[in-house]
Length: 491
Ligand SMILES: *[C@@H]1O[C@H](CO)[C@@H](O)[C@H](O)[C@H]1NC(C)=O
Ligand SMILES: *[C@@H]1O[C@H](CO)[C@@H](O)[C@H](O)[C@H]1NC(C)=O
Ligand SMILES: *[C@@H]1O[C@H](CO)[C@@H](O)[C@H](O)[C@H]1NC(C)=O
Ligand SMILES: *[C@@H]1O[C@H](CO)[C@@H](O)[C@H](O)[C@H]1NC(C)=O
Ligand SMILES: *[C@@H]1O[C@H](CO)[C@@H](O)[C@H](O)[C@H]1NC(C)=O
Image 1 (cartoon, rainbow, N blue to C red):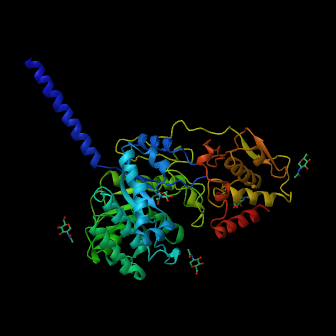
Image 2 (cartoon, protein in one colour):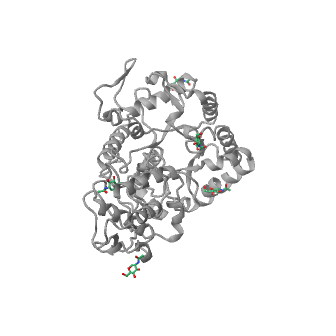
Image 3 (spheres, helix red, strand yellow):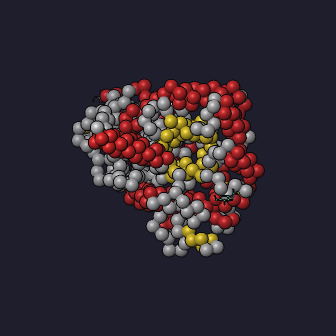
């Protein structure tokens, strides 16, 4: 009897310790990732959720509130930021009912009946980018207010916080020193109103910071300053030393907030990462260097000179998206830590005891076959130009070009790459490898070195975006420019 009691007591103690550990772990959330789905063949959500769990990822940020995605996240233990696309802001800003409907359908329903752990609603995505010409300036705050009221009315305001993911171009420093940071002059008053509103609702400021873009935009930007390994001419801001651009940029925001009276506002880094293809600086080595540099700092709980504590951040991004607009640049389809099929691109530790990224499991592929230029076809055939341009317009040729993974292919290799990309995106339909008799299907992998001729994954057609939305020139200027360069270089 007495012995039994002791055992019971010990058991109880163990159970309590376990519970305590679980509670403690629940509050330490770990790194988040952005899960975008602008792909011709998105991996099925259930496979992605398993991959997130296998990688110890506990937070995801979505760009919409797609119900298939949210259903896959139910009871996963993963915390979720759902998103409202910019094109919905107008409606939500002008109608309280629309906001209530949005919250009822896309937040409340998933929380109450599906056990989805929604923590944030991202209202808009970088709505104040200068390239939008101010189109969303008048409607973002009203949309934010309406979504907040709807959350409050639904009784969710303490569990679910609103925020607006903003590009780092909403603040600036006239002399590049973080301590001179303030919001961009033309939206200064608006930014202060938004910050005031977020603060009043206990909501965080969300910012996307991209050292890669700084390097891409400015040839004189010192490459080492984009990474986290130290930079020989650091920035000295009144004794605060900046050896990496991320910290200087983040602290410019901290100063902008402080200058306007909100120095304690919590900050989420909504997107941070490095692309692996489509530009001379976008490659596996640089992406690994950047991401591991960031993760090492993150895992050490090290912040910036102004905010030394742990960072809150979402890596950009989880998986490549081959249907994204390439208007920002050809790198835009290559931000993933994983390829389209869920295989990791490089070695990266994103949790304290990880041994690298874990691939998606049970991924179905199409057959091991490729479409290439027929050995008997001639480079001088007048159909070469038009067929390649057709293939690239409707598929993905962003891995061709100077400094990219397939940048050193010869002319025949270039043509084969274009044909194969189209063939795979068209699910290896026989009719998708009939480029005026210039092409042929082969079972020999044409890949060489880093230049991969990929086999597409075999996903239900229901998940696939229609081929017209892929190459359909959402951003015709960039694509056409790229195509004419491609054609010129081939002919
Ligand atoms: C819920 O979110 C989805 C996906 O973002 C969107 O298409 C839909 O319109 C939203 N529902 C409502 C009622 O606003
Ligand atoms: C912004 O303005 C420029 C120049 O006036 C124009 O070319 C572009 O299409 C505009 N963009 C949007 C999103 O309105
Ligand atoms: C910010 O937080 C610190 C420490 O928690 C506190 O001492 C300070 O008064 C706060 N400042 C503001 C402006 O709330
Ligand atoms: C392709 O080749 C076949 C057989 O050699 C021929 O009949 C056909 O006209 C060719 N098609 C084109 C578009 O050149
Ligand atoms: C292959 O295409 C790329 C992209 O247009 C071009 O830069 C390269 O020069 C081409 N190579 C050959 C040998 O045509």
